[in-house]
Structures are given as C-alpha cells and as structure tokens.
Image (cartoon, rainbow, N blue to C red; front, side):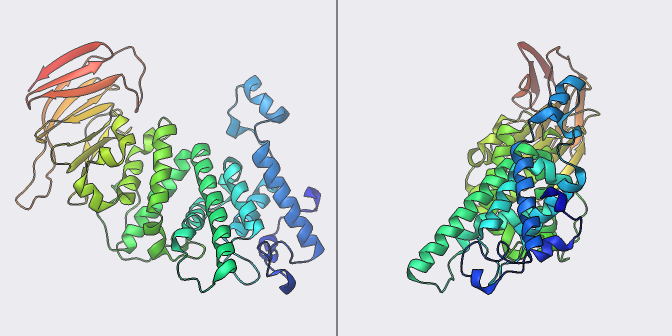
Length: 416
C-alpha cells in the first residue's frame, strides 16, 4: 500500500468526496468516498501514521542513536517523502470543514487527531503547526459550545456523546504534543495569542520579543478553527490553553526555559482577569511560584517580573496590562525578587556572577517608569550546576535596604 502513494496534493482533497449513502453514519464522507485507488491511499496513509506514531522509538534505526551518539530527531524513522505525504493528509483530514458528507465527529477525523498527537515529533516539520493546534483547540471546546443545536431526543444525546469523544481525543492529542514538542507548542500559542490581541485592538501584551503586533489587522486563517471563528475561538479555549501551560511548567520546565516570557504571556491571556484582581497569580496558577527567576509583588499583586535566558527581565504591570523590558544582565537571569514595599527589585545572574538592585517607580498617571539601577555587586558563584529553573539560588529582602543571596547552603548579604 505504501508503494501506491503518489506525492500529489490532490490526495488530501480527493478523500473528501463521500457517497450519499454513507453520509448518515458518523464515519461517513472521508471514509467511504472516492475511487478504490483513493480509498487505498487513505488506508495506507492512516496505517503509516499509526506505524510512525506507535513504533517511532523502536527498530534498528533508533538503536543506532545510542551507538552513534546521535539525537533521536537526527534519525529518519520514515522515508521523508512518505512522512511528508502522511503528515499532509492527516492535517487535511483533521482540518476539513464539516459538511453533510463529512461529519465533524467522523471516525476518520478522530483517528487523524489521535495520530497527529502521537506522532507530532514526526509530522511537525511537514505540517502547519498553528493551523493544527488551533484546529485541535476548536475540537476540544465543542461540547461547551454545543447549545444551539435543533436536534432533540436520542439523536441529540448521540451527537453530544460524539462531541465529547472527539473533544477528549483532541485534548489528549494536545497534551501529547506538549510532551513531545513543548517549545513548538509554546511558541505557536504565543504567536496566536499575539495575532488575536492585535486583531482585537489590544497592544499591551505580549512583550517585545514576539513579532510586532499590527493592531486592528485581521489575523491570518490559522486563528480561525474548523467551525469556530477566530474572534470566538481563543477566548472560548482559555481553559484548555491554561491546562496546557500547566503541563508545560510542571513537566517540561527545562525544555522551555528560553521561552519563559512566552509562557507567562500565554498564561496571563488565559487567566480570568476578574479573578486575577481578587487573588494572587500564585494562588490561581501555583506552578509559576516554583520558578526562581519569576517574582510577584505580593503586597499589591500588581507587578510580575520574569527573567529570561537572554539576561533581560520583563516587568508586567498586571493592572495596566503593560510590559517593560529591562536589560539586566549579560547572561541568563537565575533569580529575582521584589522588596516587600515593591519599590526595589533584586536580580541575580549565575552566568555573569552579578547581583543588581533596581528602583521601581510610577508616574502621576500610575504608569511604570524605566527601572533605575541603584547598585550592582560582584556575587559569588557556586559549583552547583544550575539553569533557568534550578532551585540552587534564591533572593530574599530584609526591609528595602538589605538583600540575602542563598546559593545552596551559602548565604551572602548585601546592603544598599
């Protein structure tokens, strides 16, 4: 069957021609339509997707990874042409608009969703990640949007059950994609959030490390889902996005250390802003409290500081919805902390062995000013290895004039 595959773009579109006799069943449309050759191609592609997703970690090729010291992504598990054609067809099946001949909850679409999630590390470079992620988010939120259906009785119950099954499959696929490619998922979600906010005339978030937001410009098609328009999809999917970010922080912290600012951007977008006014960010999203290079001003719950691998610190004004980038260090920011009164910020970099104190102020209109460097000290370095999320270094304030740096069991105090 694999030998019958022809690398032509028409295959994915040709699969959508279903017969009227099959349109009543949940799996109609893409399964039953087309010529015998197209049906064989569809079957071959689904089987190849299953093989690639299920057995990508086995076989002689993967055995050569340890023997030759090569990374897993450098080893071709499938023939590149076959992998590309499989990925393109799975994407086509997943994102096809529902019609009388192609149901939203068809068996083939659910199979494509499952295989895209399980083999995302194989398909990633052959598909449009933004369209796939947004399409999966759309499927995951459908049960919560299913209120206007005119169906009644057993038929409505059956439709609800199919929607729940499809949503659970999409949810599982998204979580698998987070584990397989956390960096890709974070960057994709951050860019989609930026595009959405720009289309809604909101330019405050995200920070300047992402592409410039063109306020008021209609976002590209990737921001629209399979059935939900772009203006409704991301707001409706905030709960699902927040769960994905929890999985990222809890299980993939080391991999996404460079994308910490993007993670914070997406989390702040997905949080309930009214709840954020009543509760601390660490109460709502406690996973962030475990990151040493992220600090929240507890007293006012207004300011959030996040340190980046580039040495920059991003200051978020949660009430004003604004951000400000601070060039604090020449190496990655290891730890930071606000003073209790919120007027000072301490930052420490393990890479450049420097501890700095910054003055935080606001103008008469309550807008945060550019932080002013008050003092900087050469700080000790420890032999303990550390990274962006290592817990070997922390900072504590005593009043607003004294800073204590903890590195392992060593403590050093600095006075302003």
